[in-house]
Each structure stands twice: as structure tokens, then as C-alpha cells.
Amino acid sequence: MSVPVAGLPRRLALSALAGAGRFCALGSGGTRWRGVPAGHRRGLADLQPKRVPRQGFKDSDSWLPKYRSERKSYITNPNLATTLVRILKEEAKSPDQLFLECNPGPGILTQALLESKAKVIALESNRTFLPHLESLQKKMNGKLEVVYCDFFKMDPRNFGIVKPPIMISETLFRHLGIEAVPWSKDTPLRVVGIFPSKNEKKILWKLLYDLYSSTSIFSYGRVELNMFITEKEYETLLSETQNASHYQSSNPLWDRAPNRKLINQEPWSSFGVYRHSGGQEKVKNKNPLVQTDKQVEENMCLIQLTPLENLFTENLTSVNYDIFFHMLKQCFMKRNFRLMDHLQLLSPVNATAILKEMGKHGDMKITDLYPQDFKQLFETIEYFKESCRWLFDDCMEEMIV
Image 1 (cartoon, rainbow, N blue to C red):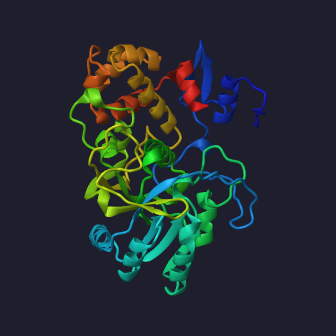
Image 2 (image 1 turned 90 degrees about the horizontal axis):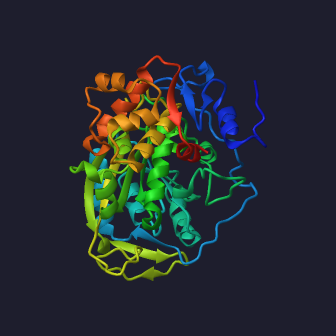
Image 3 (image 1 turned 135 degrees about the vertical axis):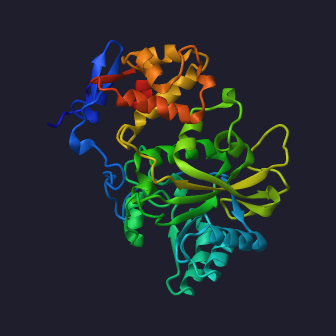
């Protein structure tokens, strides 16, 4: 049965969008029901989720973002490019894998990849570099495809009709002839690039949402990411945290989703920084894109993120992943609460029974848990047979909407 959403209160609109039987009202929040219609369930591995509406590749009307003095880092050192190709080839499971290069700029890494017999799709968001890349494309006999596209702005969550460089992944991949593969298969393509320093946190969060929901690039399979990221962000989000009090809500998500590997480190002086107009800036061994009162020397870390084949389980799927996210955010907003207090806020299921199943005691704090414990907590609550298992307060509902 279809339910009109426009004009409904936010809480009712949420229930209508979620589908019959998924949420119900309870006090000032809501609960999640165990019974989800079969059509809304995702298989444990291979079922592809519904994608966003299609848009024309060349002729769609649109808005274009206003670029001011936006600056980006590029690989401009041929020796670094050669080193990266060697490392990526050593990590490859197949010699014929496809590379999707994000913002290749002057094409130094592009040429190195092509010389190694790889096939490359270059997604460039700066028109200044397109003529050189397109000239190179004509010489490569189909080994290079150049597209005016910004990988880091692909599949915006709130969009109308979009136009390159902002694109929808389904439109792009259909144009390129890339087909989805089952989640149980090897990675269909490898993405390589440099995270924009200005928006690293937002981009990382969007990647997590896309991964756990099996949408955007991850609707095509277990796409492997090979990305340079600032050393600070690497240490904060991706490294193994020894002190639990330093955990962020994203740590358990990174810990349980992709296989993470640091495969190289390079000083900032190894990269070139260009304005959007195409002018290059002089770079010392510090991050010129992050403005602080005191600049410090910093490295860039090349990390490899490969989605795990067993990411999804019977109790954690691309249907209920959002509840896992909201549970984590709720926990970390009140990190000094006892575990027992959190359970009483999160779920109507008997808290003592949950703790017994987990082998934990109620006086523990969130900071006493390790990243893997949060997934165990979520799956334990999901495992119980009660029809209503999750409570939503107003803050969690704001996150959903």
C-alpha cells in the first residue's frame, strides 16, 4: 500500500518512507519492528539494492557549483607515480584490473598506470586539465577513458537534476560499460586518488554510509579504494586506537567494514597543489590546504580499503545498517554513561538479558568497550525475538531524517 508522505509530520513521514511494519510510535520516540516485508530485505551477499533514478549522461539540465579559489593536491612527481604503480601492482589480485583515477590533474600517475599495461578511467573535475588528458586518450587505443566528473561529489544525498562534474554513479558506470558484480566476487575495479583535505571527514562519512547501504559505487560490488589521506585523519579515524577514551563513533564502523592497510607514506613536498584556475603553488613539507596558526610538517598516508566479503550478517544488513549508525552516535554522545543506562535508552529488550548474552556487566562505560564490541551489542539486540527492539529519541530521529 502506498502512503502519501508530503505534508505529514516528520515522525509519520519517517514511518511511511520506511515501509509498513518497520517503525511504530512509542512515547516521544519510535521503535523498530522485527518483521520487515520480504521485498525490503537484502540477501546476505548478492542482492543488489535499488538505485537512484537515471539521468542522461550528456544532455541533462543542471546546476553547476561555484568554484572560487578551490585548491587540490595532485601527483606531479614521476618517481612517486612509478613507486605507486609498483605498489598497486604488487597488491593486485589480477594483472588486468581496471583503475578509476580520481582527479589525475596533469596525468603523471595516469601515464605511469598506462605504461604498466593497466586500463584507466580518469575522472577529472578541473576543466584546465581535460585537454591534455583527452590528447593522451587519443593515443592509448581504448586503454584510457577521460570523463569530466568529480568522484568526491558523486551521488549527492540531496540532489535534483545534476550535471558534470557532479554525476550519478549509475549514469557514469552505464556510460562506461561497467556492470555490477555479486558482493561475494573479487573487487570489480580499483579507485586511486587523493582525498580533498578540506572535506576529508565528510567524504569519509559518506563512504561509510555508501558502503553499509551498498549504494553508490558499492552497489557494483566490493570496490577497492587506494587513497592518500592526511596523516592526522589517518591517525584519528583509521589507525588502531589503543586508548578507548579516544574512540569516535566512526571507529567501530571502520573496524568492522573494510580491510584497512597502510601501504605508503609520502611528505607533502612530493605533491603539487593547483588552484582551480590551473596555477600551481609552491609546496613545502606541510599541508598548504589546511590553514592553522602553526603549520607542522605532515605526511600523506596511502591507505587501501577493501570491503569485507562477510561485512553483512543475518543481523546486520544494508536494510538495518542505519540503526547501527544511530546506535553508535547515541552511545558516543553520552560516552560516560554506564552500559546499562545506554541499553535502557536504546532498547525495550531486557537489558540484563542483553548483558548476559554479551558477557558484559552493566557498570561498564562505553569507553570500556572495543570497536568490535559495538557490533556485538547491535547484533545481540537484533537477535532477540521481541517485536519491538529499538527506541528512538528525538536526536536519533533527526539523524534519520
